[in-house]
Amino acid sequence: MQHLCGLLRRCIDDYEMIAPGDKIAVGISGGKDSLALLVLLAELRKYYPKPFSLEAMTVDMGLHMDFSAVEELCHRLHVPYTIIKTDIGPLIFDIRQEKNPCSMCAKMRRGALHNAMAERGITKIALGHHYDAAVETFLLAVFYEGRISCFQPVTYLSRMGVPQIRPMLYVGEKAVANFAGRYHLPVVENRCPADKSTKRQEVKELLSTLQGQYPDLKTKLFGAMQRLPLPEWAPVRPVPGRKPVNGGDAGGA
Image 1 (spheres, rainbow, N blue to C red):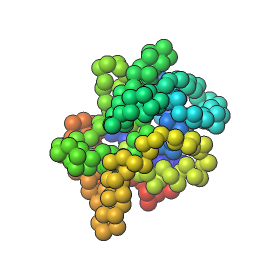
Image 2 (spheres, rainbow, N blue to C red; image 1 turned 180 degrees about the horizontal axis):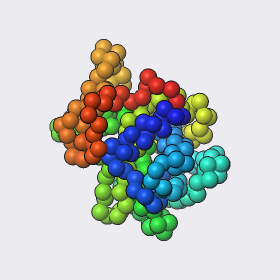
Image 3 (cartoon, rainbow, N blue to C red; image 1 turned 30 degrees about the vertical axis):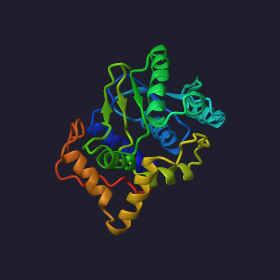
Image 4 (cartoon, rainbow, N blue to C red; image 1 turned 120 degrees about the horizontal axis):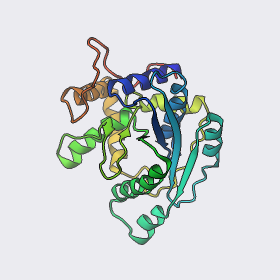
């Protein structure tokens, strides 16, 4: 855990993600990424020099997913947990039968989160996007949209009024999976009909193939994203001479 907390802190510091007194909500989907982020932030708040409080929030999509084990985890971590009940899943897949369900789903989930965050006085929301997700998103934009783009480490959405932060951008998916297994995180079965049948999954599989031939491919792509730089991707507090970010896969959990 110490190694991953170090990567988390490095990312938070590089992009100045946390300010003293922040009330941060972790967006919990039930997957390994968001649960790992929750546990790591709960550990980091014990000693991070800028005090912050932590909550967890889940938008229940109405797909009959059981979050009771997540509630137990939050109780052990002393993190308040809010489940926001919706019918987003049936609306998108059964009623509207959306051809691009992921985009519509993301918009509707953000809307559901907005009201809950306002009620709880949340100042920032932390999302579980990791190192691999950033590289995949970068390639998705190139392959399918013909542009150089990716989500930002810190995103300011005027309609939500609450910045989104992504503290796990320096942590690779393999490291997250190892951490989730070692600490027995209560991953909730994903019942989304679009799971593993998306363009993102295609890019993930392509990257895996290319990585076999070019072992440092993801490291170089991630470095290129920071050096271009993409909007808001240049670290606010760069450290000269520091080694490139490699997702932490070589380190322990």
